[in-house]
Amino acid sequence: MEYKELIESGKTALGIELGSTRIKGVLIDYDGNVIATGFYDWENSLVDGIWTYSIEQIDAGIRGCYTSLRKTEEEKYGVTPKTYGAMGISAMMHGYMAVDKDGRQIAPFQTWRNTNTQQAADELTELFNYNIPLRWSVAHLYQRILDGEEHVKNLDYVSTLSGYIHRKLTGERVLGIGDAVGMFPIDSEKLDYNEEFVQKFDKLIEKYHFSWKLRDVFPKVLVAGQDAGHLTPEGAAYLDESGNLQPGVPLCPPEGDAGTGMVATNSVAPRTGNVSAGTSTFAMVVLEKQLSSLHREIDMVTTPTGFPCAMSHANNGTSDLNAWVSIFSEFCDLMGIKADTGELFSKLYTNSLKGDPDCGGLLPYGYYSGENVTMINEGRLVFLRTANSKFTLANFMRANLYTSLAAVKLGMDILMKDEGVKIEKLYGHGGLFKTKGVAQRYLSASVGVPVTVMDTANEGGAWGIALLAAFLADGKGSKLEDYLNERIFSRMSGTTIAATQEEIDGYEVFAERYKKGLDVERAAIKAMDWD
Image 1 (cartoon, rainbow, N blue to C red):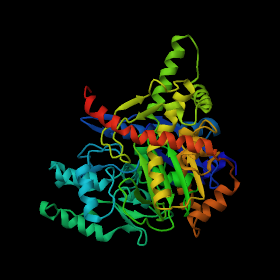
Image 2 (image 1 turned 30 degrees about the vertical axis):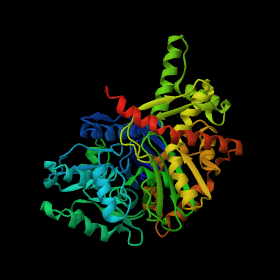
Image 3 (image 1 turned 135 degrees about the vertical axis):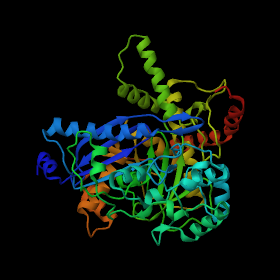
Image 4 (image 1 turned 90 degrees about the horizontal axis):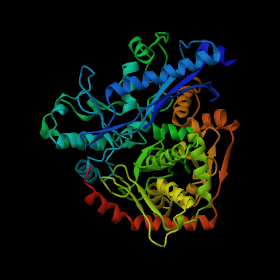
């Protein structure tokens, strides 16, 4: 069918993902082909020491993205969408969104970027003998309890951002397993929260005499392909300001950006993995078996169907890299040169390939915030070099690209070198890979395995959640991995790059310097207190 007819008949799947700097909507057919996209740019704010987005920002952002998508459909195909075969919402994993029984927000939304939960994460890790990262929702919840915050006694619902939006659209308190695992440890056999840990947590907080227990306030866990509710009249009005969208559209389970990244790169089967590189950078590796020991640097998560995964998650990715490119843009303006932003990124990235494999002794840290992999709870932006360093433009850009992957590389070293995890396929996706053959080569150098970037990589997690919606609408009776292999990715192409041994060795030298230089980062945190 022509795309216009598909839109009119509702035989399409819509995915919307709320990322750190952009909300993106993608409309696809059931074969994964992109019909239309919509965007809304936004930024988090540091308010009273908390990285957050306001409710007003969230409401305006989700509506603005949908409006952008609807207008694209109207302009390209001359038709206004009224329904879809299925929809899905995804967003940044982890964090803390708390509401009362009337659905009102009763505490600031805390994003994944916040590292103000050290005491809670440490105590829960010891209680469970299982790594609880600082970002996880249960760490945020317990820290709020430890801090004696008044709102906790009035809790009715705690969720991630995707679960919050999903409830606004459907009224359902549910969450996809790949996002739920960013709230609380998951039992991959029972496809639910780990009941032993649930009971330990409830026992831990008994002395506070709350009216609720953990399962009362956390969302129900669902897996890919399960019905997660339908768009209500209130949800349709909330999403579509034009009033054309009709209620009744089925929704797939809401997911986190890690899960949608796995889907978007076809990395949902054991021995596959992907690296998502953007404002934060994380690697996901689907495991054949559980890890042999606890590692505080590694999160244990799942695919959208519940397979166990190991995650190396870095809070800091490309933010500082983007800031440096903005400086070069200002310089072009000063010199009267008209430079397209996309062209600037492309030229600077490509020129970095001329740099030394070890970046000539240059060492930046793009720590806008704390970094869990290196156990640093605050961030300072630092650039280091010696008098003998080769301070060239190519090395400068190469070093900033290397450092955006460095913290993730430390976690991957634990998996591959210490735990012996095998990876047969590693995929890259996200904005860092937009310039072909550059960051992809550096990622391969950092982990020592070939890296593939699919032609669809730029569509990212929004395309991934659209695929999960399509799987709900048209994948009945299939396993997700079979559906993706046979229906979606069998027709799609990509490029694979394997770094040379010289490049691998050069990155290892950079990584050793990166680890040694962390003492300077720690010292900078103590000394640079003028903010």
